Length: 137
Image 1 (spheres, rainbow, N blue to C red):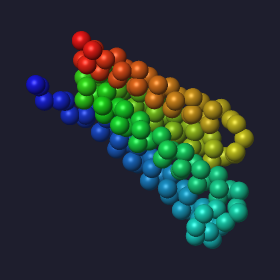
Image 2 (image 1 turned 180 degrees about the vertical axis):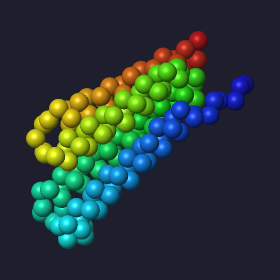
Image 3 (image 1 turned 60 degrees about the horizontal axis):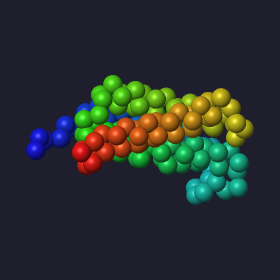
Image 4 (image 1 turned 45 degrees about the horizontal axis):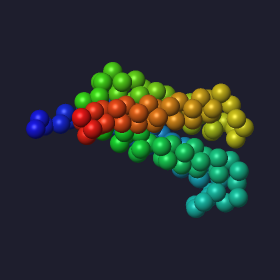
């Protein structure tokens, strides 16, 4: 059996995701210092919104990176992995900055979640096709 490919493309997007994680964390920390809130949101709506910016990012990042890595390891299209990685990073940026500005629905926030869910769906379907061909052949 051939050795699986190392997921270098996914590693690139994981690194970008890590940088985005640090940036979003810094935004939350900055808000904590400004509002003098050590834990939770202290009943402050703006602090609550900033913690959701990071929380929403964290809820999707791990799943998407696992899907991308599996897709790459299972010999999925490198172009597809790049397209999904780019779409994920851009969607999370759009969502984070949309939500950081207001809790109201706005184009950045809406596009961010729609594209994130599409990335998950496309990666999942691609994996099912690739794996289905191997295990049901």
